[in-house]
Image 1 (cartoon, helix red, strand yellow):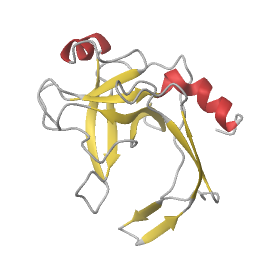
Image 2 (tube, rainbow, N blue to C red):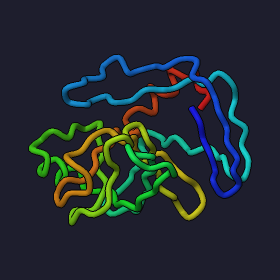
Image 3 (cartoon, rainbow, N blue to C red):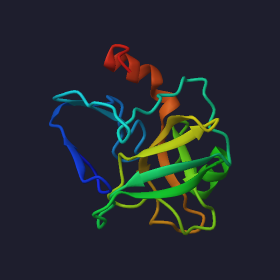
Length: 173
């Protein structure tokens, strides 16, 4: 795993020691699409590297909340960022013919034009709360095409897995 900041040319590289995939992951529906990576060495925080908050199970990311998704996609050499909005669960589920489970959250733009895409899977959907704290709302999971009208991105909803994350990390998160 490599993280690079092109403005400063700083990079950090870590080997992955272990991958913990959710036991109920369903490759056909993408339900329970979450895994944790244990790194071989610690990551040190500085002005360019900061942690994100894991939300409590009671945390609400309401429809219309502005969030950000990042990823390299298939083609980019620089990390890309897109501004997206949380989309109402019922609305999104209707667009996808009831394929959006309660463990998923949708974000994007109903009109299309902005979205995560192939190669971004596993990337973060983060929301800034009260202008000071970043929360991990979702993890890029699936969608139909990229940035298509009425086809927002579908993400693993992190609040549904907070307890699982704490169990797997023994409360170290």
